[in-house]
Image (cartoon, rainbow, N blue to C red; front, top):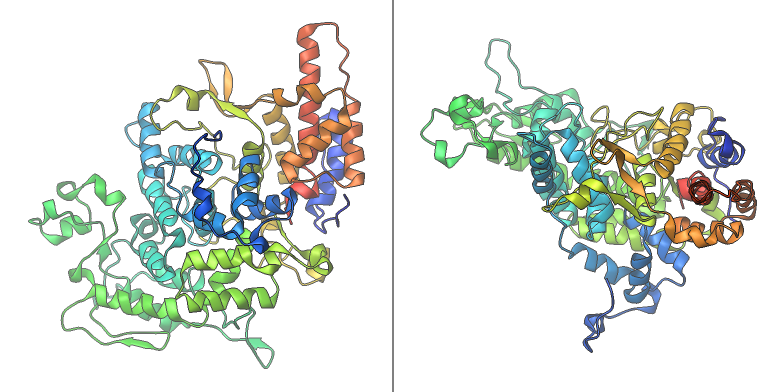
Length: 591
């Protein structure tokens, strides 16, 4: 089965000797429960449209690559049974495994810590990404976390960050306007973009902090330039028109004054500023996970003008009224629908959606008043997502960001975690920070270097074939020679030794792959490669990559007379087959 090669091509790298040649060439081309006996069938109540049923396992696999953290055989069977649309509805109605907050707190207690840190948030994220049955909700929440960015590089309070992630997860199928308000008032965002405890002007030189006012427009709602419904800038005399001015930022900054730590009713007798500043007398654990309270005493009563809206000067400070006026305007601004719609398409389906695709989703966004469930469903069911034209395949799809490559591998290949198996209540993976591009993934969830995420949605790789074609490739912004080599070697080490954190009790890395299911295929490299390819990419490899993979596996001996050495040799063949597939364009590029 031959497929169009990807235009993404980074520079040459070096790998472990036994896979150097084949992995190098492939990376170069890639980067430039059981049944019930009951007679009642709950699916009998579903209306299954033939048009919504995948025509093959490969089609179901493509869909699940867009809608989950990685397809599994059970997921493929489920989608084929009930159809795309029913699966989406079922997923949004699926109960979560647990909250991130509960898992982070439980993990901290298990690890003997008095409070959760960024590490425990990582444990929870990886566990939910790989094991949570509510895959679509978790995948959309991850997409939202790369739009409404906070980072554990700046916030080490694990409860605060886990609560923020829970909020995104809960709001993954909510109304955009509600999501925006929850983002604006969450203490994690308040801390990250410095509008928590933001005070009004005092007439002696102090002015409201403008950080959140700027970013809520630029990154969370309307963007920098006026857009058409297709997501492209509107041009006047060849120039894009900016959506807001410095005056708009100043007016909006006044709106976001007077919001600070949650003021518990049990502390209502305290003078206001003690809770505003979270002094010892007012400190309460709920303040890290509860929406900020409004403090009229610190809210600007001056006139607030922004984006064509005027909030008149207030005789009595009314922060809630000011906030409502601002968020209503941002949610209904003409730019918001195409700006958010296009980014969600990019995060889930393809980096370069057609004008028609973006315009169609924009209409759904507006018509549903920003209902994210309707928007996500429209994105995944759009004809361009399900049946892209052969003529656009050369530029269709997206480079998988590194964490999604690893979640895909983990959901496809059986693995074990000592910490998960040893924890009775809310078991978790004892993962590690994977930020190092030289030895790991070059990316860790919720650990972006800035509010601009790991990569920008409009990133164009300089001096590349993509740039000449006017194509963006957001994930290429974190793709370098170092990161390409680091990813490949990380996969090799993970398959051989395991990954995550070191467990001194078991003298093993916490997460280790179980490859025994394929031991009976090691004597037939072609069958081994084909079987694993179908598991990892949904179909067999193209002829050239398949030949290289089979040659690489065949070159590894399985002839030792020592039983221990022979078992290791047999495992190395399976490792080699998986490693080669994991650096092919078919695995690295979601198409």
